[in-house]
Length: 86
Image (cartoon, rainbow, N blue to C red; front, side, top):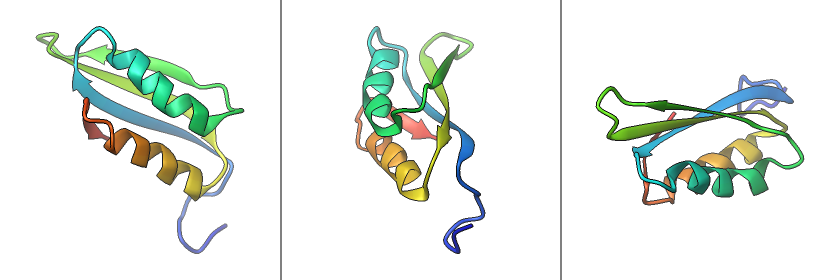
């Protein structure tokens, strides 16, 4: 285990990105994340807000390092359509 994190790798991780519910939001998240988590096969789940204005996209995958997690979160934070990440 690394001294930089309490996570033991490989680890099953769920990353969530939230943004406005526009036609391409889910595909945008997929395009950002997939190259960073290969060869892992992710599972995507989505959830609409009560009024349907916002969409939450969760990506479940096996992370192999802290650097990989930082890459995923960094890509999501740099995307202007992503309002929040968890």
